[in-house]
Amino acid sequence: MNIQFGELEEEMETARDLFVFACHTGAAYCDLMELNRSYLVRDDEGSLWLKFNRQKTGVLCRIKLLPEAIRIIEKYKSDERESLLPQMKYATYQSYLKALRLRAGIAFPFTTHTARHTFATLITLEQGVPIETVSKMLGHSNVSMTERYAKVTPQKLFVEFERFLSFTEDMQMSI
Image (cartoon, rainbow, N blue to C red; front, side):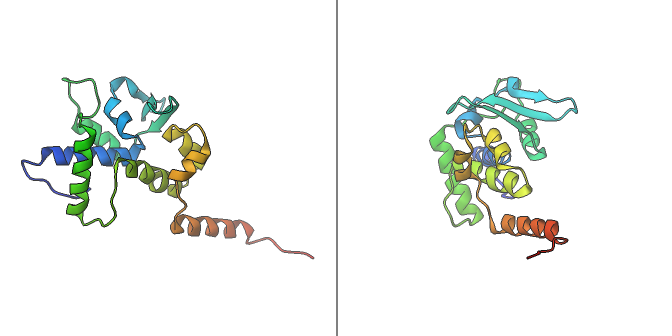
């Protein structure tokens, strides 16, 4: 997220922003390119949500927008197009992701799908969102598919075990 771009690197910056947006929403590439203003909904408290049917599954996604995602929508807001985000061909996007990875010194290869895994694991599950809720956010028809995306990290395991221990502190075993 902290990579600086030169004047002639506007498309690479856009690719980075698309990836960051996907990391904060869990939206797949094909859905990112189709998001438009009609998918933005405000709840009773004024929070902004994305509400759309996934192209791949047709399942409804409801995702409350985090501040970073809102910032990106605002950055690319344009009256000249209906889409929320700029359009970018898949091959171009993948190429820029590779260049960004190399520039940032990231060793493992990542793709557009890495953003969905990031959302499922780090943004939601590791922050305490139940996997059933993550499943709905990702537009999966069943939790078993979500389990492939949302991995229990060592940090999550540690936090959950500590939480479990706090529940059992007053318990006594009787034989």
